[in-house]
Image (cartoon, rainbow, N blue to C red; front, side, top):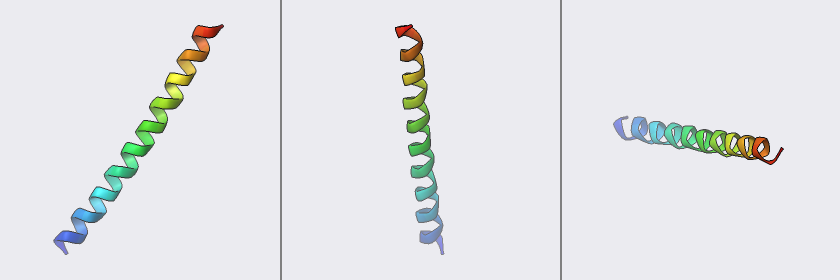
Length: 37
């Protein structure tokens, strides 16, 4: 039970980190596109 709980939590953390990484990449691209104009 405890191990499953940790495994599920770790998976959720990884997904959150992936989403955050995507958000940062999009945000950076947005800032760069503003700079180019």
